[in-house]
Amino acid sequence: MIADIVIAGAGPNGLMLACELSLAGIRPLVLERLPERTQDNRANGLVGQVVRMLDRRGLYERLAGSQDPPRPAHGFVFGALPIDLSVLDDNRFYILQVPQRRIEQMLEERAVELAVEIRRGHELTGFTQDADGVTLQVSGPAGPYTIETRYLIGADGGHSIVRKLAGIAFPGVTTDDTIARTAHAVVPAEFVDPATGGLDIPGYGPIPRFLHHRTERGLFVYAPLPGAPAPLISTTEWNGQDAEGPLTFAELQASAHRVLGVNIAFGPPDGQGPHLMRKLNGGNTRLAERFRDGRVLLVGDAAHVHSAIGGPGLNLGLQDAVNLGWKLAAEARGTAPAGLLDTYESERRPVAERVVMSSRAQSALIAPGSEVTGLRALFSELLGDPRNVRRIADLISGADIRYEVGSDHPLAGRWAPDLDLKDGVRLAELTRDGRPHLIDFTGDDWGYPATAGLPGSAVPCTALLLRPDGYVAWATDVPQPDTASRASLRAAIQRWLG
Ligand SMILES: Cc1cc2nc3c(=O)[nH]c(=O)nc-3n(C[C@H](O)[C@H](O)[C@H](O)COP(=O)(O)OP(=O)(O)OC[C@H]3O[C@@H](n4cnc5c(N)ncnc54)[C@H](O)[C@@H]3O)c2cc1C
Image (cartoon, rainbow, N blue to C red; front, side, top):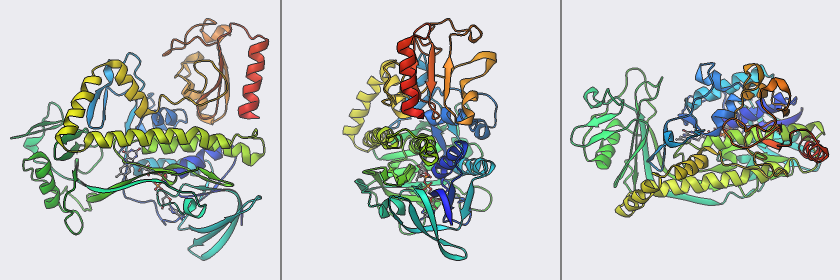
């Protein structure tokens, strides 16, 4: 069998990449070893620029169940320290609370609409590559078979066989000093504060909902997530003893007692379990040395793993997929300018490095001990300054990403601002086809005077070239096209679109 592009793994990032390739006119084949979509849930939400990115593909409304554009969040957390986003005059921080199961279901439905073939119960077991292509060994329900393809994408998660067989090192650290226990559990009704929706525990005090709550002995989370059978309760302890066997409610209760110093009687929700009952020992923070080896590329957890604190995983992985999709499609069509595919790694690996830095910093801030309490007090003071709130918010959302695109306009290389275009059309509605766009604001009917600042930005701009992934490849502020601006636009088109 022959396929243009094969994606190993139908997790969120493999499915997103499949959708992007298909939008760009290349139908990939997706291999997934699980016979059915997993009912396990990992992420409880999307945090940061990924929410805007999904909006720009028309996928946000499918998850949010509303036609309204995303609205900025009022607050979030960094290392279990509350961040007040309402102090920002131009708040661009978005959150969407939605279980990963639902994200995967939506992306699979979208991929099927776009005529992507997904083979479930088909496991990639090996491959070899040469200059012309990749030969895959696959184990399917009817036995082993081979596939010839031009490109293989490893979207096969943190234990990626693609990464291992490609010989790509995965340096980083593995820690074994934490135990995180998580379950859907009923808490005594009298402990729930109807005014805040959080807990108010006699002998302890208030615990806000959704936020990591740190004590000098560990972490506690109370998250009454919409649609869940009962609130999600989670504890994290350091250097604790692991009780043998699967998590029980009694074990969760004992752990919460050690962290908070008070007793809370957790009970199982109504209905059949397993009520999540997850116990994770330690964690990995690792970043692939390279994202590409010849005709083999990595996306998502196959390329990077880190702590789930702050929920950065899908913000990073889904945007890897959107960065790679249009470039790989151009390469497969034979229209890609030289070096385009290499910019996947040169653009996305530094972003992953920043996520690793941020998640390590947050892991330090949530650790137990009085010296960490001191560090947190200092951080809290710093977060009283809106400039620091802006900096942290931009770091965790990824709004500070600026790719090197070869144009010196302040918007070049950045995420294009959310614009309202003519006839009330939002930029996010224009970009759903995943194509590049050249937007000229100088015509009368745009309603933008030639050198007006863009909404949400004080930067004068009269035209911009938008890459398919929503980043600005080129922009200008000249009132009318002149020789220099025409030449720089032509160079940008050649550099990014061939
Ligand atoms: C407890 C926890 C909580 C988290 N919370 C959040 C959160 O709130 N927000 C957030 O953004 N992120 C969160 N994350 C991170 C997020 O879940 C991951 O980043 C995300 O699942 C990675 O997606 P992926 O598609 O790269 O890999 P995966 O989801 O791991 O999918 C890989 C797929 O590849 C398949 N596969 C593997 N090997 C093969 C093979 N050889 N052949 C064929 N198929 C194969 C697997 O079966 C799987 O379906 C959390 C993670 C954990 C563990």
